[in-house]
Length: 154
Ligand code: COA
Image (tube, rainbow, N blue to C red; front, side, top):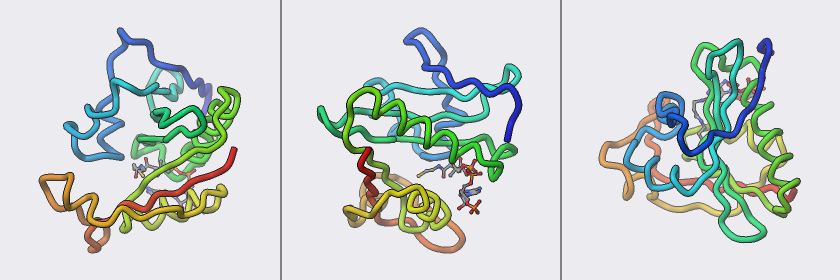
């Protein structure tokens, strides 16, 4: 995968890795709605930040992965899968029973990845991306309109 990988939890005084976070969520305004109530985990390799994920508890039993991103040149090498396993393991240790992730209807590779790891589609928030983003989002020619919510029991 990548060499000398360490995953660290960001402390309050640390710089927020917007460059990575905006790969998964194109609206900084939207990121700022959850980032200050969430824990950010950063994947570092040889001194560079190459990935991250963000966890936000929804209630005592359920936690959401609000954002997961791998730097473009490190994608498709297994790091995203590793980060998802790490997020699930940490959440289980912290006593959560369910983990949730939301993605767009047009994010077919992400949908495939999450389902391969055992997440099941549990809800669809129709027109979520139309209603909450100023600019239309397109992926491979398909408009991203609905949020697909996937859940996994821990
Ligand atoms: N974009 C989306 N999905 C990708 C991808 C890419 N560039 N590259 C691979 N995948 C999918 C594939 O389904 C792959 O399965 P396969 O190996 O059977 O083809 C699966 O992810 C696992 O690959 P892995 O190497 O572990 O993933 P990754 O390190 O590229 O991380 C993402 C996956 C989605 C976190 C990463 O590609 C990324 O940061 N994309 C941009 C931000 C984003 O979309 N975040 C998720 C928002 S819901």
